[in-house]
Amino acid sequence: MTLLHGEPWQVAVIAALNRAAYLVLGIPIGVWVDHLPKRGILICTDLLRAVVVLSIPVAWVLHALTIWQLMVCTALLSTANVFFDVAHTAIVPLIVGKDHVSEASARLQSTDSTTEIVVPAAAGQLATLTAAPVPYFATAVTHLLSSFFAWRMRPEEEPPRPVAEREPFWSALRTGLSFTIQEPTLRVLVAIGALVNFGAGMYNSQYALYILRHLELPANAYGLALSIGAVGGIVGSLIGVRVKNALGPLRAQITCYALLTVPFVGLTVAPAHGLAAFPYVTIVIFLLSVLLVVASISSVGVFARLTPSSLLGRVTSARRFITIGAVPLGALAGGVMASVWSSGVVFDVAAAAPLLALVLYLLSPLRSIRDIPTPVRDPS
Image (tube, rainbow, N blue to C red; front, side):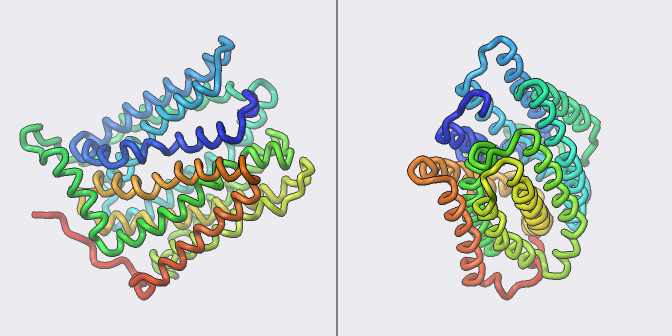
């Protein structure tokens, strides 16, 4: 975006498009995931992501790269990401079992965080030495490798039912959405997640632009800050299960959400003098990484245990339609607020969202629950 001299509203639109597919396709995708081989979905979406990402450096080489292409690519990637995320969430319990989802999530988060330590610094250095679109080549390769490893998996999936025997599409869609809304614990957690993600969408729409332009942090220093801050993800993956066991999965998740207010406003105290902002940016990213990873480890086991296996895809998509669908709405709101006032105001308002989520939790019956309620059994 800095290479193409993007305006704040354009950055906000791209940030919104990054999650917009959850609003448009979030619920029906769950029906398709439940009816189709999940492993095949992972393979196909990674191949699509590789092609879309590769189109960006190709357009740059041809001097044809525009912000509008970035918007189209972001929308396509958003669609592929929804398919991938829902299928991935639904397939993990089939591989490790519902009782081990939190532990598996901790290991996956550790791997993700380790990758995030190396990649941003390397990307920042490469962007400085060459040009910003060049690292997209490497990203395309990673998606190709991901599709290969998904092809190598052999999960114990039930064979897809013939089309004639499947539950009608709209009936299946209503079943997943109704279960998500009617299950008491899921209903409250989904509302809390939507509040937190609305604030996160506001924050994400402006923080990179704020760091690079307002704080004047060089791109390579920003990449290094991302890498050092990503160590927080490893810390979170190492302590996540312990925190969940000590506080209980519900309280651990809510505690992490409430503490997000600290990094959300952390950038506003950073000095706008280039490298002087480096430690502030690094600490903010570190705190975000720790809190988000611990919250993820605590929450993923809750949803898996409360949801029948036959509804995992539909409930996952319905839940993410509401929670992640709040991200693009927050991003658009953040873009408008930044244009009218400033990014600092956006960060302050975003910080209020986790606090409202905490109030909602304290007013709900969940405040007296420490452990996950009795798991729901699959329909016989």
